[in-house]
Length: 172
Image: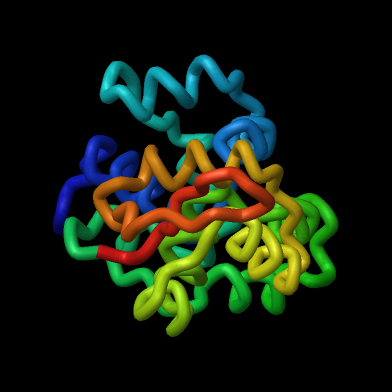
C-alpha cells in the first residue's frame, strides 16, 4: 500500500486551485483557513491538514489516491465540469459562479483566442473579450496581469489609441 504524502497532496491541491481559477481567498474560506495560512502553504512553509484535504477532495471530485499521485490528471475544462457537478451544492457552486482568477482567464481562454495569438490585442480589446465571457476585470488589472504573466505573453508592439500609445499584447 502506498503511503500518504501530504507534500504531494498539497502540491496537487494547489494545481487544482490554479487550473480551476479559484481565488486563494475563496478556497481559504472553503477550507476554513485564513488567506495567510494559504499563503504559507503556497510558499511551501506549511501543508494542508487532513480536514482541508477532505474538503478539497470533495470539491475537486478527486479521491485521496488521485490527490496522492505525483502525476495527477486535471481534465480540460474542469471548471465547467465542476460547475455542472456542484450545481445543487450552494457552498461549492458559489465559488465556481464567481469570476475566475485572471491567470486562469489568461491561460485557459485568452491564450486560446486566435486573434490574440496571431495579431495581438490591446488591453481594451482584451477587456471586451473577457466581458463577453461574463468576467469583468479592470483595464489596469488586465495590464498588470499581462506583465505578471510574461512567461506566456509578450508585448508585440504599440498602437496609438485616442492620442495615447498603448501596448499590443500577444502570446509568446
